[in-house]
Length: 109
Image (cartoon, rainbow, N blue to C red; front, top):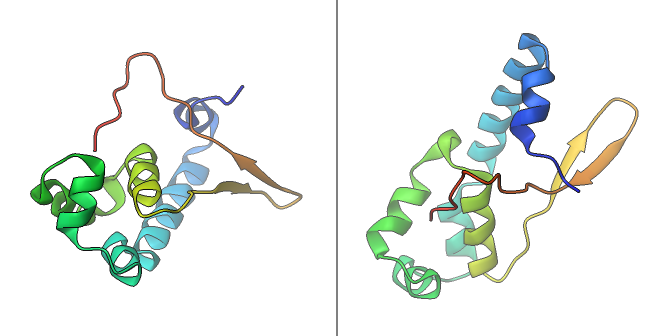
């Protein structure tokens, strides 16, 4: 069973946490959700319809930057017809993993 990333992060050294946050910020800069949506030739209005939310919510999602949750990104990518794949890369191995929702968290798009 997958464990929440926050549990793993809590056991990481402050330096490792900092590196992870920096890498996440860089990755989010590289993969702009707006660009991804535009490459799929889907408008904000169409995507909002698919996700059953307002177009303004799509705009907010696309402009959140590093503060966006993986669950929101996953729903966004799925609505575009894709699948989000997560990997943890270590010096000695690369492991795929999933994010599991904790009991008190709510997925919000």
